Length: 567
Image (tube, rainbow, N blue to C red; front, side, top):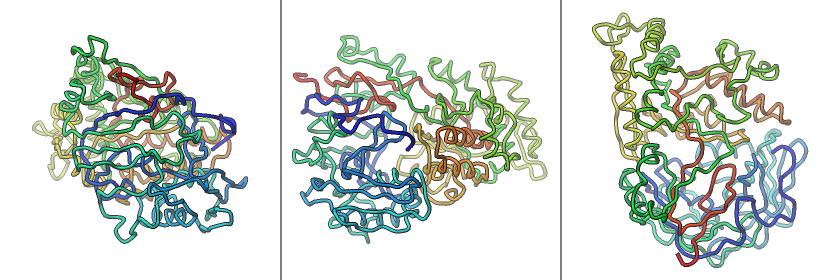
């Protein structure tokens, strides 16, 4: 994206993969929730994990040890100009789909048109920026952009490639348990909707010796088990039915691993460091709903979230409060006053930016940890009164109508439910009613994608090279497009200006300034109650599973693991 690739032309493997890793055996992983589709490229349905990458590859492979750098995969070379007004890919003549047919330029052009017209909203957004797509001599495909875009050549490099002979465009947008035909290292062995997905490694996989693949995809079989709740999932791990898990419950991480296999050293726990921004986890306000249209109401409800009490009583003090959309990275605005570059970006929209955000001191309120902090409640009531709400007969009501302040928090897991109920209890003591509605994963996804909710938990995971996807996350144009990640319905000129500056940035200083400006604009909008994050990945694994000593910036990755011989 900027600068030069870290790896030389003759690199042999990514630094976080072991090219000498043994092959064979089976890896069994688990997920909570369900799936009813093997098509992850459409809005409809709940797709199974691992289809992308394992079955369907992109033109190029992303190094997860660099902010944003791509290396050869289906495309063995790439050409662009200084302005990045076009990109041209040369298809590796060795590239083959799982049925043995070669990848052609027509397959690539077909995939682009399919994703542009019927793909998920982010695909439609990105690929619509191509003004002309054409086949060129020598197995090449050129995409000419409607206007230069520094990031778009890389986005096109990450485009999934499907076989045009195997896809019926008229039925592509329907959910299906028929696996898409891609070029990846695995094929679907069995798929039981909502229960399990089994993938088997292809012995004829065309790309197994590419440098970007050495040390990856080492298991003959990958099986993913789906569970309705986290407790059942954990019990399966304890019994050895699941080989490894990324823990998300601090209580379980602190106290749940005292079982015989763990005490005997057959199960190990590790905290894996990560180098990317910590995920922004939050309870998100749907500002499309009248109850959350006033920013003062959103700020008041944030005042009433007692993180200090929750962390001590629910989470063993293992969490840190999240203060930035780019937490723990140089892209974060936290603790950094805005410089002249940032002010130039968001200055025209000064009314949207709170002074503390410009100073870098805008952080979530800190309570006394009692669960009944009077200062926090007093500040919340002051904000509510400014917005036209007053406490009357034990309930916060709208002046004039007497309508109580009430909303629903929709959740899909027991951990989310536990958090939401605790928050609802805190709000109840302030005279505000928050009903917690538990729904299954399919209904949760469908309602969230249609923005049919008041408040939901959500997580935005960011890279060190944010760009065009930020419009899909937070841009005004995505606020009313079903299936985007603009769950809050943000329509902010300051946010849009920062996203535009981020995409247009050509040097590192401009890029960092744009990311921090975006952070300040998002924090100023009070679109969510920020939650918390862990210091790294919490990984528990049976010792029959090995992993490279060096993780990627994103932590350790299942595709780099292997089965320990003889175990």
